[in-house]
Image (cartoon, rainbow, N blue to C red; front, top):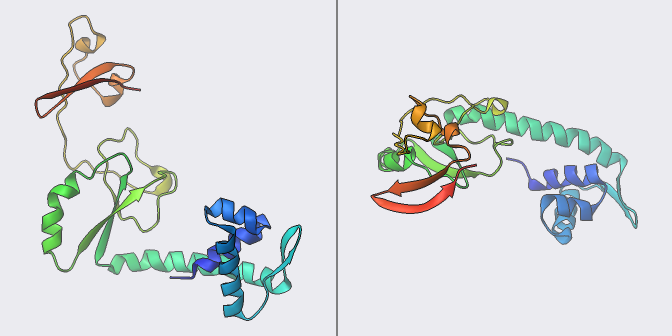
Length: 200
């Protein structure tokens, strides 16, 4: 909803260096320079004083930094409000996990012309992107309260374990995933025995 140049401007202002901003944003220094130049051209004023020691904000830059934070917050808040009216449902899933439930219902969603379904990878569960509506997960010992998500059990998958009578797990009436910590297990899927794995 707003130009990426604003994000770049905020990072450069914070770090005081195009090079440091480039490293922090995982882009090249020329890309940072180009975005700042584009922003200054759009605003018709200089935002930074550049010298051999880095960059410092001009008076206009100091004023724009305050406004840039307001613009960013307003755009994020507006986007969250408009999510109530959107026709696309964004499902977050982890890099190492697969979408299980929604894969099954994908065709039903595809037939619904009013609602579209898209998937987005969650790279950091401490910083979940604000555009994600639902998170699909196989198992979670605790919910993610920092992000405000509530978890609802939709389906369960039975887990069967064969252990010798001397194993401590044989004494338990009900198992949790955490009971498998530090256990070496063999996984069987579709009647095929996989290699053993150490559960951490």
